[in-house]
Length: 327
Image 1 (cartoon, rainbow, N blue to C red):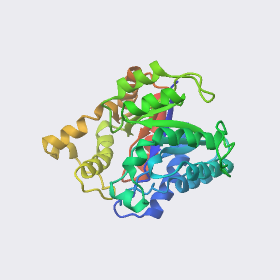
Image 2 (cartoon, one colour):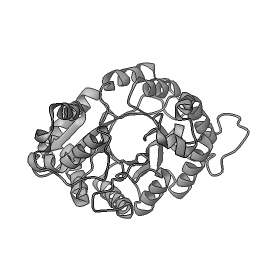
Image 3 (tube, rainbow, N blue to C red):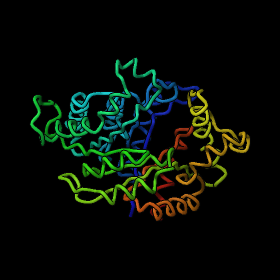
């Protein structure tokens, strides 16, 4: 059976705040653990009123403290925003707190508006060019497989599972070269999905961490008792995505009946272009769509993303998704 995981942006709902958002993510992780999901990942985004996952390692620590067995981690850390030594220390500490449970997914994109580079005192374009070297250095800080002039404490010897993230061919090539598991962000950028997976599997070089290719693919998934109810719940995320692409991001809005039908053709086409990695509907519908996606990608794991304005509905969606896939 293909394993399922959860991707969370720690959404801040309209009428809510950051404190409630982080608490709700903890409750969501508990629901994912109870339902049998393998991983719960938090994504790094900055300077967005509607996303509270920016201090990713801090949020992961909270998730770890309210769960017991589920793997926890970053999906991902945008390494150009940081330096490898600091990330090695942070995730070394997480591994010390939650041994054998910590994942570290690494991405090359800044994960935020360009102005964040000024706030971080970083030239993000230049930093992204050093991404492959930074990944190698970070791995060495954790494993000790290179002779480095400094030791990360915590960090060295931590059993952190490294992943390469991507939404283009670059990440696939680097993951294959370094022998890392690979996660593709098909939930928002499905264009290069098939070619990226082909390159990764074709060019994969075994490493001490991994002897054969291992693929995770992301989907936007929302499940409810009926197709109509699931589509209504999913309209909150649709609205948030349209606002983001329109340059007007904000907190996660309440659902709107018939939202997609109300959009101008260009905005609706933008959403529909991502439907190849979307499963929204009743358990029967979700099972069918996830099954077709697994058949297409041959993914070892599927990571599901999908925010709702009602946190309880999102927890119930995770339960229904798992029952649908297992059934």
